[in-house]
Length: 119
Image (cartoon, rainbow, N blue to C red):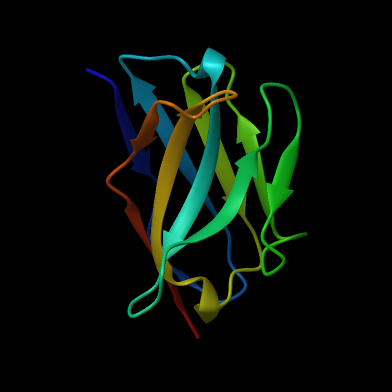
């Protein structure tokens, strides 16, 4: 059974850094594009960063560009989100999403990991 598990969420002070991990079991990311999304209390879920293809294409939300970096791990079942210069506005539950490329027929979500940035 395919599953995505996020980890790395924590409480951090403004200006700090965190690295989130998304680990897949039951699949590898060979044929999937992976992205990170977040949902703050009372707000809709929004895209943070994602791969746009199976190579190196990426896109970022304007609010995180230059501060966050999405990357692949050495094994083909882990994706990271490095988050620097965190602000309280980054406080949210962060979700990992994997979609088959290019048609997105299979769409998997993780359960989320909480990131809290204190001022």
